[in-house]
Image (cartoon, rainbow, N blue to C red):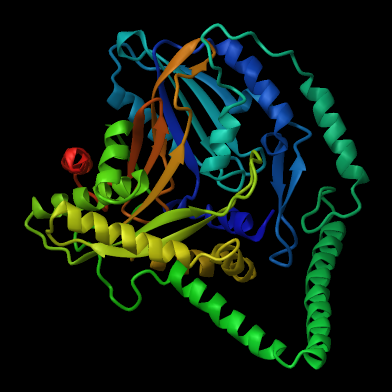
Length: 475
């Protein structure tokens, strides 16, 4: 595991900070379960992390490792349920939320898919959840390509022998002499040796780099100055990404409380309208998306006679440089935005410029990896305590993903809508949008102890996007 993935593995022990992602996909008919099962077996064969479990190292001396689950029970991870007779979309959302809240069995691969029948009008649904240590949102979209099709009657791919795939993976692991961190043999002595070896290699690398750097100083008198300037730049980048609004508290006076509970709402906005409005206002679809979230939040407070000077929010900057399926390459970035009543044009400009400034501060892989390397050496209780404190100062999180711009199908059923369940992770709510087939499909995943009227927040967001969309006619 990378340091960032190891951090997500550790903090998941605290349900308040659950960093995992999920989605409810609504379809025009029930999924053909046997077809879907066939396709998912092939996905598990293609993606190693879907057939691997996490094996810890010794204490915090090294990060956990991924190891093939030799006792993989494929059907444990793939299930088929039906809503009660007369079930509604609200019932679907509540079922998905309960499934999401169920903790993963940490001795197995960290994913689950549930095919759900019984929606009104003969429709069907698919729910999935995945541990964030497996992949980020972009990686999850790429993974979905393995079980989605461009046409309703797409031919089935060849059958795979999962037992043979697992046997080959185990053999490859046994031959791997570069293993670092956790133990695959369940031996305490082996675990200790590998963990200490990993720690020694890490520290030896630091020493070697330091000696080499000192040697360069003698040949280049500007070298120490350059190194100092780079260190300052890195510190500024770190502050930019995690400092948020600096010493100004800001934030909602209504959304102070936090809990492990979740509530799901869905919302759709026409993509063409979002593009046109974003362009007319001098920005992008993402600027439109985040500005609508801020305006809707402000309207929620105004309706209750509560003034908010500023909201503390976060957005995600992808640092992905390849098309790999799985893995994590992102940096959560904080920004403070206006909460007071103001014209939508002025609010849009402030949100756009504020995010642009923070985005420019992200360097390389971002600050998350560096922070995680330090945090992973600390006790879990210390890390989760600090994380709770920091998340409690954030009002909400946002994320923007892209999917297919044309209709897609899952085992004979056409996808109508996607309702994302982005990680709330100690904030008041997470708003994630995924563009699909001409729409911005949004999932509002809410802590109902923080936001006591979730459906009212949804209505405020819908009205805010409607007002922003009216700017599309501005030339």
